[in-house]
Length: 325
Ligand code: UDP
Ligand code: MG
Image 1: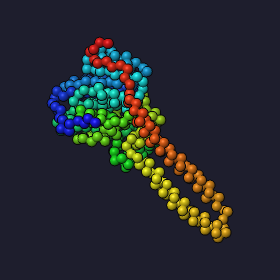
Image 2: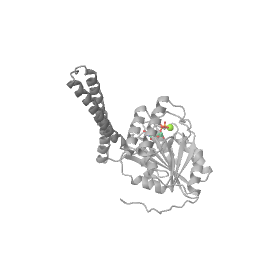
Image 3: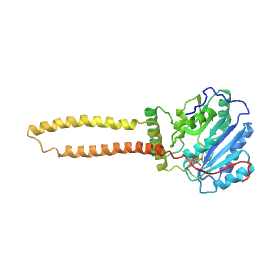
Image 4: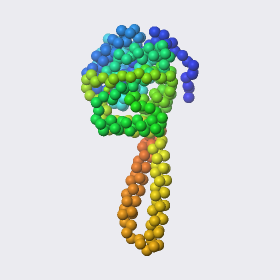
C-alpha cells in the first residue's frame, strides 16, 4: 500500500485553504442560510475556504438548494449520493473531495458553533496541531435512558479498545496528512470518530456547547444509534468474543461443582429432588449459547460485509461551484 511521506509538511501560512465538509440529509430548509453563517465567520477572519456539501440522498429540496448555491457561489462543491447511505458514508465522500490544506468537518444544522472555527484554525497554524477535536461540554437535554446507554457505550470502548470518545463529536479540524492517512484505512463500514482517534497525530481539544438545531429534527432514531454503537464496538475491539470463552470457562467450573454434587447425591441414595437445578441449568446454558452465537454472528456479518468489498457510497451528481450545469 502506498503510504504518505512521514515528513511531508504543508504550508501553514495565512493563505492555507480550509475545506469545510458538511454532510446534509433533509436539511433543505436551512442549508443555504447555515452556509451563509459559516461563510460570514470565515470571511471576517480572512480564512481562505471551500465548501464540500454532501447531500446524503435527501428526499426534500436539499439538492435543489445546493444547486442554487453552486450557481452563485464558486466556492461550493455539491456532491449527491445515489441514496441515503448514512452520515458516516457521506463524510467519507466529502473527505475525498476536500482539497484544502486543512479540513473541517461539521454538521449542517449549526449545532457545531462556527464561532469556534477561527480558534481551531489558529491552533493548526500557530501551534502545529494536526487534529483539533471539539468536545461537547454537556450532552444537553436528553432522555436519561439514552444517557445511561451512551455512558455504557463509551466506558466499553475506553476499557476494551483504549479509545476515549466520551463527549467527542464529529466537529473536527484535521490537517491534510491526517485525512490522507484516514483515507488509507481500508474498511468499508466506517466509524469516523473512532478512526479519527485511532490515527493519532498531534492533537488538541477545544470545548463547546452544543447549540440547538436551527430547523428540522434529528435523524438519529434509537435503532440507528444502536447500529452505530454496535458497529463502533465491533470495529475496534474483539473483547466481546473473548467474553464468550471466559463465560465458557466459568460454566465449566460451575458444571464440575454441580456434577460432583449430583453424583454424591446419587450414590448416597438421595437423588430425585434435583429438578430445580436441571431447569435452571437448562435455561442458563440455553441463553448463554444464544448470546454467544449472537456475538459471533455480529462479527461474522462484519467480515462478510468487508469481504464483499462494496464501495462506501455511490455518487450520482457533483457540481463544482461556478461551473454551469
Ligand atoms: N446526516 C447525514 N445522513 C444521515 C443522517 C444525518 O448526512 O443519514 C447529517 C445531517 O444532515 C447533519 C449531521 O449528519 O448535518 C448530524 O445529523 P443530526 O443533526 O440529525 O444528528 P444530531 O445532531 O442529532 O446528532
Ligand atoms: Mg444535529
